[in-house]
Image 1 (cartoon, rainbow, N blue to C red):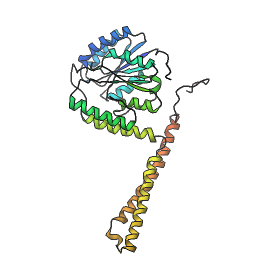
Image 2 (tube, rainbow, N blue to C red; image 1 turned 60 degrees about the vertical axis):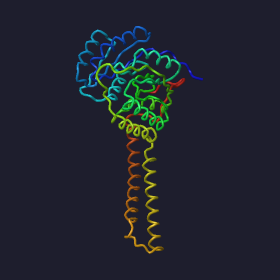
Image 3 (cartoon, rainbow, N blue to C red; image 1 turned 90 degrees about the horizontal axis):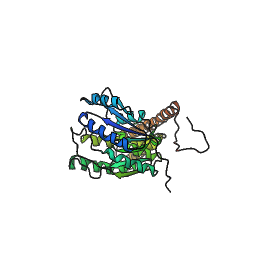
Image 4 (cartoon, one colour; image 1 turned 180 degrees about the vertical axis):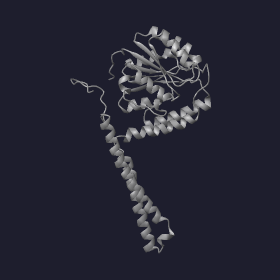
Amino acid sequence: MTTVRAKPTSLSVIVPIYNEAESLGLLKEKLMQLRARLDHPFEIIAVNDGSQDRSAEILAEIAASWPEFKVINFRRNHGQTAAMMAGIDYASGDVIVSIDADLQNDPDDIPMLLEHLDKGYDVVSGWRQDRKDAALRRNLVSRIANSVISRISGVRLHDYGCTLKAYRRDVIKGVRLYGEMHRFIPIYASWLGATVTEIPVRHYPRRFGKSKYGLERTIKVILDLIVVKFLARYLVKPIYVFGSFGILSIVTSIASFLLMCYLRFFEGVAMIQTPLPVFSAMALLIGIMSILMGLLAEMVVRTYFESQHRAIYTIRDVINLPPVE
């Protein structure tokens, strides 16, 4: 049975921004209307990702008249993942919601996300079921990418690329994001035991400017997913992957050597007439190096966890025990 948790006491809305000066006025109006309807303590964290237009000036004007509107200005463009990471680091709310600044997401959908958090979910992800983007260049490619990500990660979502998501703070604290990994937060959370759900949200055509994303982003996302999958399975036991490959290489080397001996003594084929001697030696060398790399990786992982005072486990909560700092 799903446990219904207490209503969130505070809300942080993270808005990554890059060259969205034309959208910020309308976005402010929608967010202020939302704040008036919600009974949660409410803050906006706008992360200006090195915009080249007037975004920084407009954000400063909004912040001057709205104390709960907080601004982080990057020195240069670092990408959406870095902007999300900065917003999470500075957020003070029990619940964190991310939303795009281009008005394609609707802030009026945020209460719906919060309602599902109140039902006991830890992560609520938006699904742009009726997406208003280019049919082939964006929608089709996105569907293929989402299908691949769901299959590899085991976390079934229709729309990983939708920025509109809500998270309980305790399931993403300590998460560090790199590359294009902000879209994989539901995967991180699920692997840590969080409950994840997905709900349809509204999506509108872009009103100002043009999309900052191209087809090359799909390749980056797939590569980042491979990294995420590797870290999830082998972060605390890298010897398993390096050692397995090393043993496979050594076995291949032995098999090649035996085949070489068979050809020499039973078929009369000289060793130098086949590539087997070189192949056997190379496979043996690669196998030994892989095992040594695995041992080195084990030392690095242990040094990392001990130097950062990090545990190799995660705890949801404790009963009759003091929290561990």
